[in-house]
Image 1 (tube, rainbow, N blue to C red):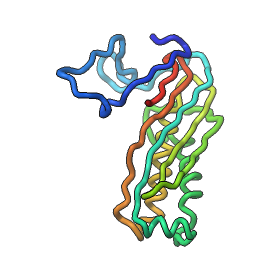
Image 2: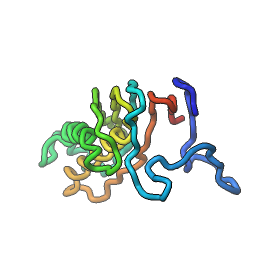
Image 3: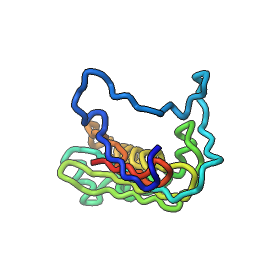
Length: 182
């Protein structure tokens, strides 16, 4: 068990060099599976309420024509960036309705930002709560739905858009400490 506040830095599985056999994870079991292998919702009732935060990122790439339409404010369905921000916020709030074993959490803050880059947009969601479990799934859901919203609003112009690299960048709070992607 990690000490409270300990910084844990890990590489994602696809960032690691291949090894002959998988690394064992001591003392870890799937928390959503009972002793008989049945799916269950984790009981967080005895866990203390702590401040928690998660940041997730992703991206959407698109054609130059789609980018031009966004920058000129000429997308027929409206402003995809503002609509995606709103959709991401709503998605974070609806995560337990979309992901079966997620707890309903009192979210204190959800912020979704889309940043222009050469061939599309980077999307970042920051979610905060004071609760008994983390908000990683809410942040990931916000990014995914924001990206899907941009796709929906531009698909008539560009069917080659690619949504990708959706990942947790930061998770803090709770007994496992802080995780920060390097």
